[in-house]
Length: 181
Image: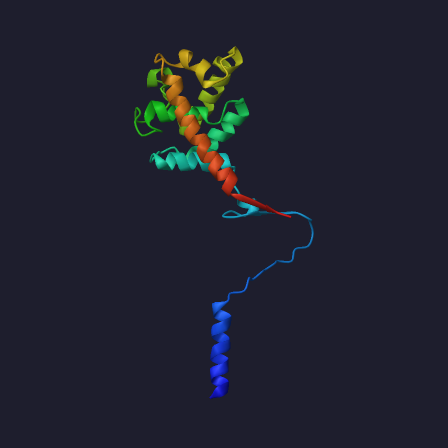
């Protein structure tokens, strides 16, 4: 019985005073390893795509499945990747209000220009932004605004959506990866 009391007292003492526990995983090969949480390295998406998807989802946008196309065509044409999605935010509440079947959520041509698909619209408008604006010196939302739209507040409102997208990108970029040495 005395041994039982000693055993119980010992177990209580050990549970009252917690000990720090350390764990390590043995890796061979590279001296530094990149560890990604949430996605494996091979499946990891561009954080810009994830940022766009998150913002589109916040607004119940039908554009969510096309987030990667915004990045692809913006990069291909040297256009700020946040610009066209932000324009869609202002012109159509991220694709929630537009002429059905037009795939034009950007107010392009007053909203009367039709595209055959979402990708065609994303591709063609990125090309046109490059050719008709950026190549002619209008290289930011404030210099594009007076040409793109009549409203003097268009650029400020588009910039607000660009900032929202950028904040989501920063949040994802700073929390998604941990580098261990």
